[in-house]
Length: 265
Image (cartoon, rainbow, N blue to C red; front, side, top):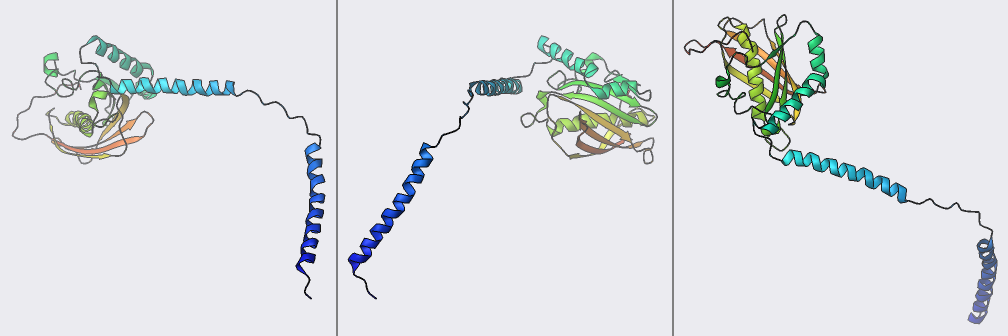
């Protein structure tokens, strides 16, 4: 059945008017309802000041750390270098738990390095000459275990040994390892002399400058003889993390005449 368009439009208008009349009172009731008391928000300024203080302190600390990293390290023999060395020594004496532990262990004997050499001779050696001072090998101390043929050396690696910024050069690490394994091997030889025949290194984790590390060297007594010494080494940080592994073969040369190393390290 077809209705005229005027009748349909009239019905639609009545329906729309009725819907609006139902909706408007509801909206008016909501707007006029009594609202609960909303607590006043506290000021955000104290929190902002706290955050500003925290990030400001972190920024200053980071700036000082970066300044120390990019500044030129003190030259060996200067007053600044001597002060740095004294600070490194204090940390070694009182701030490293492994040092206290080794000093309490009767099987380990603490030794200085280069006691076999005079001051003039030291200047011609790589690690006691060009690599001397707080900027490089700021400290080396040997703990010798004669029963187990082991050496634990505590070393400080300064910023002058860096390859990439903040990271110690792999060649510098290899030099320290070579010397420590050599010390162990030469004590095995009745001739009290020897040279490196083979050295293998596996770098496991970054070695960062400006930190102490331990070098754990041990002799393979089953394979070693009076003229050949097989040794292995691990470099660890103060948390015990393995950074470098190495193995080496040291021999007494047959044709090359070398001076004997004394009883010290």
